[in-house]
Structure formats: structure tokens, C-alpha cells
Image (cartoon, rainbow, N blue to C red; front, side):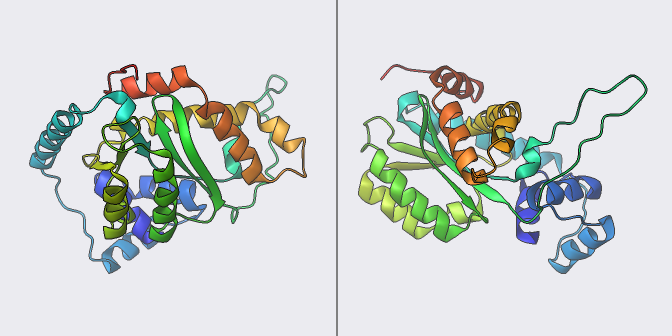
Length: 258
């Protein structure tokens, strides 16, 4: 969990301790105090310093370099990969109906220890493949996913022959580079501090909204596993080609026909 927080701070170094606590709660259902977070960061050799404006300037340079490099590819070449943690609190609705003067009350039925990962690969026509599993994503899981994904990719310059992902530590490995090279697939990393350049972020937002709208169908079928429900939601939202094209455009990618 501390490693995940440190990686998150590399992306967003100006977070307040309160915002770090929110991150830990959202990602791991861990209720941490500001003092405990501060102690944990100090134990890892982290401290709060004045942020340098130059870092943002450097980030703009890296983003420019990325756009220059990615311009060599057509949109149908690109397959984006990312992961996101989910639990049953996703079905919690923040507003509800009640008589005037009475606040609506929702009884929580969620278990904090049941955390699932959604790991999709996303192209301009939707989800190429995805995996839903309980636990967390590590190098072994991610490498296994990439090995399976490469079977659905073309060799450069065929469609779906460029994998794009962020700079999470377990996204970088000699095995991933070797597998991609042997499959004839190019590997591209997003610039730091740039989740807006990954269309999967908007896919996750649309998926979250779909899950909330269809939560009653899950609760009405107690024999259905949460992972099965998530799989179904990913399949439905991931098949929306027009949405995928819009997500690509919002990430700065011009849609080209295959």
C-alpha cells in the first residue's frame, strides 16, 4: 500500500495528507490518519519540499516528445493498457430520495477486504481483452496478461501493433520488452503526470457510471459473483465503439479508419 501511495505521489506530488488518506481509502479501504501517513513516508525517506516549476516545464517537454513520437502511428495501431482497483463500494450512491426534512439513509453491506482489479486492453473499437480478478496487480500478473494480449495483436505495422501504457514500475520489465520484440509489437510509455493521455481513464469513468446504474441487477442476483458482474459490465461498456473513439479523441488521438 505504501508503494502504491509513493507511485501515486510521483504522479501527483502536491497532494495534502488528507488527500493521501482519501487515496488509501479509495484504493485499499484503509482508514489512515494524517500522522500515520506522514510517519510512513518519512520511513521511506520521503519529505515535503517546495515543488519546482521546472518539473512542470520538463513534463511539457516530455508530453511534446510523446506527441511527436506517437504521430508516427495511426489510431488503429494503438492499444492502451492500464489497471484499476474496484470493490463493492462502487455501487454506493451518494444521493437518494426521502421526505422533506429527512436525510436518506443507505445501509452499507460492503466488505472492505473484497478488492478486485480490472485490467483491460483498449483499442479505438473497444476492449481487446480484459481480466477481472481479486487482489492486486503485480509484475507476474501483468506480464502474464501481456503475454496473452500479444496473441490478439498484429505485427507492426498491422492494426493493434503498438502497446501504450503508463510508467508504473511493474510495467517496465525485460520480459515485457522481449515478448513485445518477439511478437513484432512496439512498446510506448506515456509521459509522467499524464493520465489524460490514456483513453482508458475515460473508459473507467463510463464503466463506473454503468455499474452504478445497473447495481440493482447485481444485488437482485445473490448467486452471481461480483467478478462475474464486473466482467459483464466491462463487456457491455467495452463494446461501445463510438465511446471508444470519443475517448481516443479526448486523449489527443485522431481517429483513422483501418
